[in-house]
Length: 152
Image (cartoon, rainbow, N blue to C red; front, side):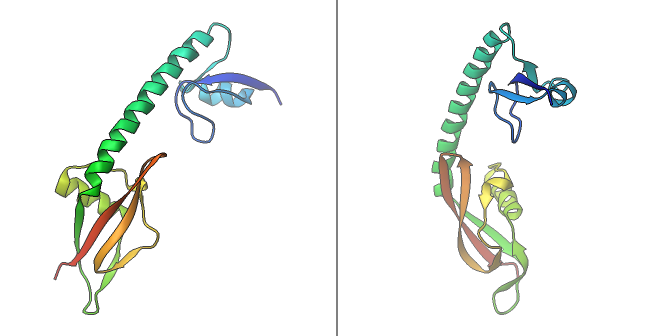
């Protein structure tokens, strides 16, 4: 099977990040990556483009890290209150999910956070205080306090 070296212009899940030079099957590059604007063929002429992509990637990653640090500081001081229906014994009808927490952050604090970054070890099925991990960046993980209250 023929292989070709390409330079990624965008992040491709499972393959690499922007400005990475990777070797892939020729058909994958020719039929998918290049037509969708995700990669260019690696030649001596595109080496300069790779350096520009590398610089842009480093700037973007530094900016994302700085944003994550600011977000980390603000999340440490927040308590997310979620009101749900529950039975008399304090058990919920259903459970509180990461989507519920993300929606509550958006509604109460106007803070948009991807639900995939909120990691629940187990579903929250009881009233009370719960601590939830939030993975903001590969280097930054913080905790968020979630208070589940009865809507009754």
